[in-house]
Structure formats: structure tokens, C-alpha cells
Length: 362
Image 1 (cartoon, one colour):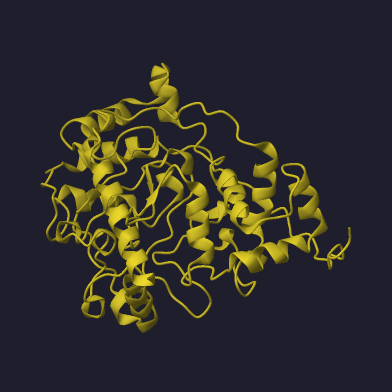
Image 2: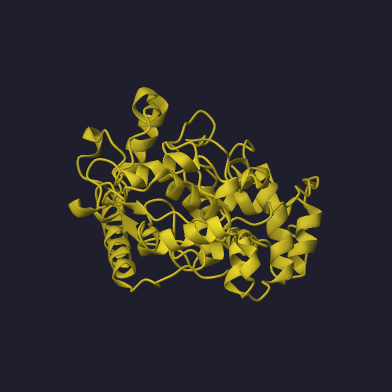
């Protein structure tokens, strides 16, 4: 029954990914949209939960461990560190602008409209935080401040499944602010200089970045194969190899033990055409989110531009751009205008636990 369920989930995910690919893409970048404020009580509570390491299995890590506000809401590493004694095989993407993502995770397996499910995946997955929902709720119930915060939102007790939505609400409140590009798109011609405007013209024209990098965050949310080279440590570090193979096994990927590359979306869809395909990365806040790509193998923005200028790597669907040095510089200067002020949220600290003594009372 468990295998059948995983199979059905895989089919549903594959259908969802195919549907996302079929949607027509916007023809240009767009300014960050004005969004309605979320639920203030949930956001405040979600902020506390986000920084609290008690929501991981062994109290060892919090959401902020891999999504640090001081590091562009990533971890600043090429390959992230998983649950204690594990090493992960992909980069920890920023959670900035989560509200505008069409799909979550590098293999695009989660719907971008459901941040709560993203949080559940990260908290309960063995590779990341290894938490059980029932244990999660019982720990949080032992914190009087958390029970008081919860009461401002709901009249029931803290519930593990709803905790995921609370953290998701907080994540969706974090987005790029005060980017020069947004000011330019809203009518301020002085927000970009001549070189940056030239870079924008290249972005939409000769470089054709806009074909995949469009909309408010510069991502079509679809799957593409660009031939990003493997990060060498994925196969030279046994801990990362083990994590990758276990991930494939969990998704029910055929013949997973013989895999020696990151197959990307194929592990989800089981369609051979999806081998090596990954979700288009957003372009927002590139100034703060290096290193780049699904495995962090490109350390600088210059490396990224050089990679695309060559038409990507082996098996890429891209073509060489043949940009001059001046054009590469202009394109880089434009891309940096998509970054805003650093979005810093301070750790509010962890309220102390106290034994909850209300069990059994009328």
C-alpha cells in the first residue's frame, strides 16, 4: 500500500509539473507586486517558530540554520548541510519571495501556492529536520508564550499540521524591497543608469534571458536543462552520495542505486526527458544569494553569465550567446538592479519551556 501511494503521488506530481510547463510565460520582467499583508498573528508566531531549533528532531537545527536572513535567506554554502551527521547534495535556495514562486524546490515537486506543505516537507524529511508532527506540537505546547500567541489566532490547542501553515505565512511575508529595477518599471527613468539599461535590452534581446527568467521574480517556474556541471563533492563525499540515493529511493525512482548524477526532476516524474531538468531560479536579490545554481557550483555572477554565454553545459537546451566583455558587464550590472535592501529579520529568541499541567482538568 505504501508503494502504491508513493506511485500515485509521483503521478500527481508529474501531472502538475507538466501543467506548469504548458502555461504561457510572461514576455518580460515585472516589478514586485503590491501584496496584502498576511495574518499578523500567524506571521509573528511563525517568526518565533522559524528561529526555534526545538522544531527539529534533536533540537539541533532551525529553519534559519539553512535560511539565514544574514545570508540572503540561504546558508551561503554551495551544498547545504542536512540533518546532523548528514550532508546534503543540493544548494539551499533562498526563501525570499516565496509568495511569488510557482513551484518550490529545485526539482519543482511542490506547488508554490502551498507554503505550508513546503514547511512540512522540510521539517519532516529525514534529510533536513527529521521532525514528527506529533512530537512537534507537544514540544511547542510546553512554551507558555507560544500558547498565548496561538490563542490570538485560534481557540484550539497547538496543532502540528497548522504549525506548518503558521511558518509558511511568515515565509510568505518576506520579499524583495526597494530594488532599483522596480523603481524603473514604475516610471523612474533615473533608477537605472545607461549601462544598466543596456543590460536590460540585452536581457530581453540578444541574451534572451527573458525566455525563462520573467515575471516579478525573474522565473517562469518551469523545468529546464542547462547542463550545469555536477558539483564534485556530491560523489567524492560519501555522506552526500548516500543522501542523494536515499532521496531517490524515497521518491520511488527506478534503478536509483546506479545513479551517479543529480537527475533533477526525473526522480519525481520518472520521465526520461526530465533527466537533468531543474526549476528556473529566481533572479531577485542575486547580490545576496551566492553561490548559484541547484548545486552552488558557480560561485559568482560572472561565472553564471559566462556559463550561459557558452550555451550552458553538456546536453543543454541553450545556445551560445557570444556576448562581448562589455555586454557581459552591462548584463551583470542590470541583474544587480533586481536586488533590493537586505531583508533582515532578527532572531526573537526562544521562550523557555514549562511543563503544561492542564491535562486531565475539566
